[in-house]
Amino acid sequence: MEQERNVPTADSHPVIVVTGGGTGGHLYPALAVAEMVQQQGDVQLHFIGLQKERDQKEVQTRGIPFHGIRLEGLRRRFTFTNIRAVLLALVGLIRCLWILKSLGKGVVFGVGGYVAAPAMMAGRILGWTLALHEQNAVPGRVNRFLARWCHCIFLTFEDSKNYFAGMDCRITGMPVRTQLAAPATEKKSRVRDQNPMILVIGGSQGARKLVEICMASFLQVQKTGLEFRAIIQTGEGNFEWAKTLPGAAGITLTPFIENMAAIYSQTDLIISRAGAGSLAEIALWGLPSLLVPYPYAADDHQRINAEQFEKAGASHVILENDLVPERITAMVRDLLEHPDKREDMGKHAAALAVKNASSLIAESLMQLLKVK
Image: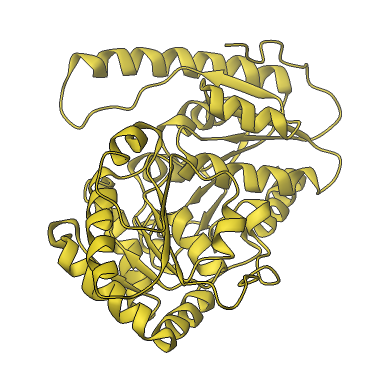
């Protein structure tokens, strides 16, 4: 796989390095901020991310130089793969030191996760200004470690400030892809007599149990005589398997959804995991939701994310241990039979939206350049 190997030498232009990625939940918020930085003026913008074809393509498509590093996440228990992960991290740190040294001085902005750590640590060593975004209600371990060196910390949730006592924290909300950030005029542009549409997403990787339970539930709902449509994003690895499951009429399976805006504009109810990125998009589009937090998320942060929405009246939360077809069936039936409940939940979701998170962060990064 080709990647950026020639790092430009420092010139008179200020430099912002965005770092993160690996999963869509980290990559797309980073790109959302990068796109806004591009609009801010005369600035060098670079991206340091996981050496992964999808990440490289998404970054370079936007005209941003991409620098890939090989990394692996650490397991919570000792394994021999952890030794390899540490060695890769050290090599990644050396590469990041070389990249940043070649660029001069500027701001390193991280979006969390182990992918951001080498560039942030290299920035610290070389005297760059550091900033990060914490997307979840409970900060990840990497961000909690890196925060002590940061000049500014951007947060999605107000409650996260408790983890960064005495630090410069700013509540910005969650950066969302540009094409999803202004949905109001597109919402519900469907033909009026179309059946309600349910969207099931488990993140870019899919969620096998969620897919299986929803397929069974939709069969039960259909037997009651209720008419609806559904799109289920299975994830690439689950697509062929999902096609072997019994399915109700009007159900569309897809491994990945490229144009989320087009799908969101037709959605009446969403069943989803509770990653911060998904929740930000749900809020922007004002969608009622059934949230099924991923039970193995670090520090159970998806459950805490989801509870923020449930407390606001925007969603119902179903824990993985309670995820059975009958539970989903009962909730889906209730919301299909009562459009007023869906509308009320959607309004509460929209009230949680922060529509200018990306621009707020980009403007702050430009200010950090001026005071560094």
